[in-house]
Image (spheres, rainbow, N blue to C red):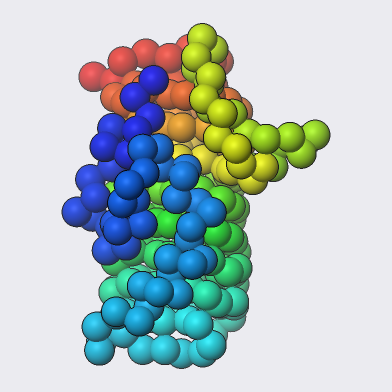
Length: 219
């Protein structure tokens, strides 16, 4: 499985890239988000505005009146937070991102130009550069039995040690409408997941996952 940080992301497209220092797998950053965020906030440039306790917003970002932001959170430059978005603690949003209508984020890191635009839940997850989720996509972050989440491709299994871990989505990947990414899902770079797909495990970079479970190379 090519699930290491370098396999999935261009770190130049993440202003919080230092959170990955010394780590091998991206999900190792999830327990660090809050502590890293509060320290990183001390180094933000002057064109970030602190709009409430432990909430910092970059220049050019627009926030609709109905948005709720519970810090700590850092939101980058030129983002768009649309009606009824809910930013629910420990959230780092990159530059030029779209957080859409009734979308909820919790303990997440979004690289630049991520779009989660319509009725999405993204919990305990990391989305790479230009990752896009269609309407109704859910990153489920807790197993039904509450046991620790594993990453697997059916032959190899990696123990994460995490009870809450949603999904890792690589750069430039597209997740179709009303799909569910089950706990511990890892989607590689440049992938397409068909709408209405229940995804569990690992999708290699440059592949298409159909909602029948068939996986083919993306051409």
